[in-house]
Picture 1 (spheres, one colour):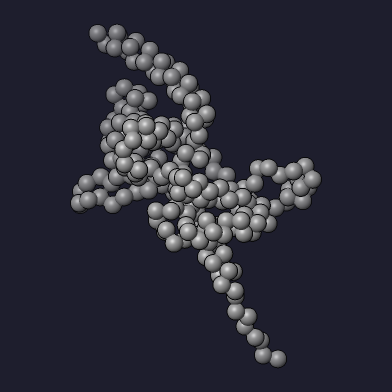
Picture 2 (picture 1 turned 90 degrees about the horizontal axis):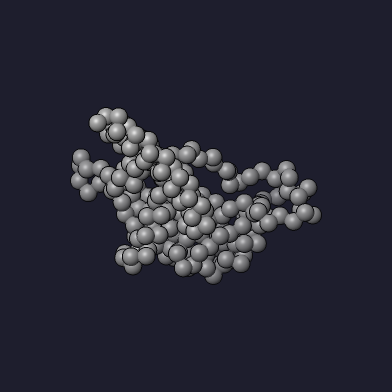
Length: 217
């Protein structure tokens, strides 16, 4: 008996067109206005669909981004049923250096927003180097610093918190656009607590540097 192809309903096609990009990563309004519009219209259906996969939809309409994350509000009754469910969104442990750079970029974005400037924060590689330089030992090798920062930035690019832009001309260092989704992962409370730890670290680093300068004199 020949098989008969069943045509998908237009609603199902639109839902699939939204779910697939979300499973691949973050959906941004500015990068695909059409997809964003469909997502807003179908977000209730999207939430129901991904809930079956143990995921939830996080959507920030003001900032213009959406992504999927593992559900954290699993009830006690669901614990046993979901215990063996594989994670579609993997947890990625970050090194201290990457966490530090993420916090510094998030803080820079907060300062940028407070200034009321453009909606896009774009930093050159050298500007990122300057953000982290104060936390490095005095006399650190400049070439090594740049190489390390580029390595950390590439990791953050892979995580989706920063977008690497093409250099305007050959030989120039690339620039990086800080993606606003970083605000969802590094919130104000986390940033405030991190600021306290950074203050302690800076005080220790400053004392060490002052002692070294006194010895050198």
